[in-house]
Amino acid sequence: MSDTAQHSAQHSPQHPPHHVDVKEFHPRAHEALHNPQIRQNFRKAMDGLMSKRRSAFEGWDLETLRDLGANVRLRALANLPDLLEQLEQKLTENGIKVHWALDGDEACRIVRDICKARDAKAVIKGKSMVSEEMELNHYLEEQGIEALESDLGEYIVQLAEETPSHIIMPAIHKNTGEISKLLHEKTGTDLSNDVEYLTAAARLQLREKFMNADVGVSGVNFAVAETGTLCLVENEGNGRMTTTVPKCHIAVTGIEKVVPNLEDVSALLALLTRSATGQHITTYFNMISGPRKAEELDGPEEVHVVLVDNGRSSIYQDDELLDTLRCIRCGACMNHCPVYTRVGGHTYGTTYPGPIGKILMPHLIGLDEGRHLPSASSLCGACGEVCPVKIPIPDLLVRLRQESVDGDKLHPARVRGHGAKRSAVEAMIWKGWSWMHTRPGTYRFGTYLAARFRKLQPGKMGGWTQFRTSPKLAPKTLHEKLKERGQ
Image 1 (tube, one colour):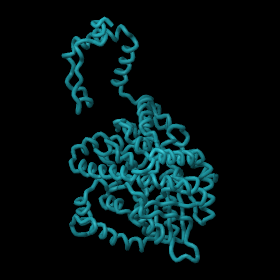
Image 2: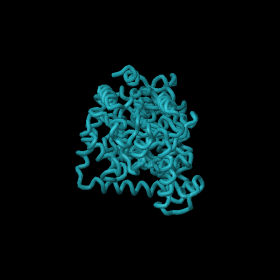
Image 3: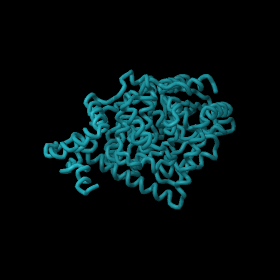
Image 4: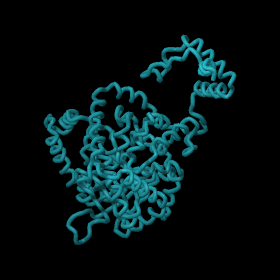
């Protein structure tokens, strides 16, 4: 592995994304729960996605396919350093320039330098969650380079000056009427609920941008080490336009997206499309193996790949948390999560929302910043049951909940010696609970008193009784009941 790659595999970033505001989760969740339009938009969308997923897997041995997908990802991760070295070699042989980025800031600088070298003034972007992670658009605009999203959902979110609410469907939080009003105000289109008209209007606006862009930026779904091939899955054709029309193409991807060979892609693709949107296959599956050759009529003159670490190496060093890197970004866990479907993605305040965000973001920003995320879950297990690559999300949530109290083992430096995260009152309550439950006599006396003075029990018990009926204490303890029965 190159020196840069080795460096990337051993260090983690120190700077969390600028837009992270995880500590405001509860106020935003409260606001979302009282917004009937948000609730209606998500309920309708999620019900449709869950139904489509079930239909797409009919007639398939789903568990066997999930086992296959999980094994493909686990095998790739087990050999990640070697596969990254092989990928770099094959990409270079194919004429693709490879760059390694320790964190999002370095990845942004690499993209900027490539753009500056070509005197680029405008960048057209395909959908990429890693670029969202890097906050690339904001960075390029600060550098005087226009960055325009070409995915329809991302384009809508960009016009609204928002972040994506879902990793697959960025504008899922908006209904047709809201989108029509936004396009009318920002681009001058007619107010209409005709989806075909709105889509055609956006396509017309974007087509000129494709032709005039100096650089195209895309993400990567799978990077094949055996052949040096970048695989890009999409439905709208904007990804293909982004990677072929501009004279320079820059692909940004996390280091975990590498797979050994093309055969592995077939299983992951079958799982990805069905889990994400309920499709048997996407409209476009792009395979990019190099820049335009002399005899070819189209394609970019230059292709660059930016392999981004941004905390992934730190995750990779933990045998349990390593499972987080299996993720193929399908969004199925979000679609089935009873918390996400009621509050939406913006409530989380992070790049990756929902169940996958709850286990991934604490690694990327540290539990000192993201300790509220693992608790934003009912632990119903739906996310783990639908994950196409069998990430044990509930188990990881439980671990992170424990670490959010006992301290961040993955990023001890970020805890800054604070130790436990319990408040003084909570710590005292649990200490008293432990003391009482390890002394049988004290426990029996305490429950005796609680039963006799149950009428003094408060009707409200904080957040627990906000949406629940307060439990009523029995008139006698369990031991007294058993004694009466002669047991």
